[in-house]
Length: 294
Length: 291
Image 1 (cartoon, chains in turn cyan, yellow):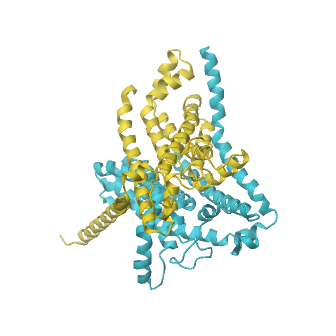
Image 2: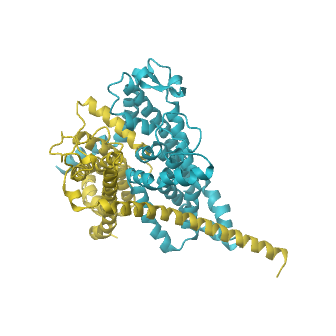
Image 3: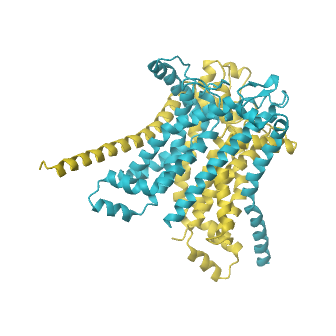
């Protein structure tokens, strides 16, 4: 009886084990099937590289949205990567123990805050700040609902991802290497730069790529502050319209316009493939780093 | 005292100090952003925060600034997150046990499964939303509590599973061997030893997934619908807090926007509470853990 139960459980668990791979496959396949309706009539290059977005006329160029996503994401990373890595350096190399322990809940909480809350905060504080302070400083006019506002909010949202992975990478650098460097008379910073950063370089790259793919797919917070104008942006103070926002904003009407839903599913497919690509890339690097450390 | 070596040492020390300050400032900036976000949301919400907001559903003209509260969204979000977390847990626990008990340390299957879980973790929630929408249509469902639960469960599954997996990996091998040597089947080892041993970590993981589920907007946008009533069955559409915040903020009326801030404060407080509970519980639930 006990053995029977055990055998049954083993079978059932074996089934569940196939689930993650199956789910990834299903998501990509599902989105592909739904976007086939438009991929069959329009060449892919036209969908991806045309900036004409007129759903009522049947024109679905995704270029403004793809560039919008890239602009916002790159802005966020330019802001987030240096700060996150320096913060991780401080926490791992300089900070006393109690600060390091105290920082954990802060990073966790930052990661746990819902994106809508980030969005509301962005609307209250970041948008006016960009519109009334930064734009006049740069000598341009902006409503504040802009790529830059989206980038700032997104940067804070990616802090936890990058910090978390970077800290793990730093922790995997053997303490003995640090001690050796310090005992040779190197300062803390020299040790960090020549030992910790060099050993962890690949891992930091992976952390940044992971941050990139996290930021790339973020929807609500960005949607709320970025302005949502379907045109290719020309400056940081222009409004943009990222892919996720496009999908989120138009779900209501997508049934009434022909091939609209297929166009949106194509957008979702493009988004998924890009994010998957960077995700897989980052994971591969991390696996290699882990293996080398062991 | 003033030789070139001393000068160089001085410069090196200054560089060290410079980077120490820069790194500390960056860490402070991260902390400051969190405080700024929490502070702004809570401070802005004070004028609109009231008890009736928590206990009433929206009345006529609520989105024009009239009477009512967001009980529909609070209840909807709780139902949704509880359902989704339960479902995700039913999938995650067996999978985590399978990875750690039935598969050895160097197993290829286990490594690939973990890899796919990590990939799933990185899939944006809007994609889960779109995918959930496709599934919903394929199953012939309407936007409803059930469809929302299914979608959010998929979103929570990799988070929860990896969290449980991480704590189970730390279970010492001797414990498993001791259980085996007493003649226990794998199944018995799984539930009588592993689950007990990792209970605090599992609980923390469950709360983490719950928090993620209750706060996610993009995945329920297509699938859960929105209503002013508290859902009474799985087939009813369900309002959710994140969407209530989003819709209220989107109206042109300052009173309603104020309520959006207040709703955001409610959601933030729920998240804070969950996070605190997770910390407290993971400390308390260590009763059955063999050290």
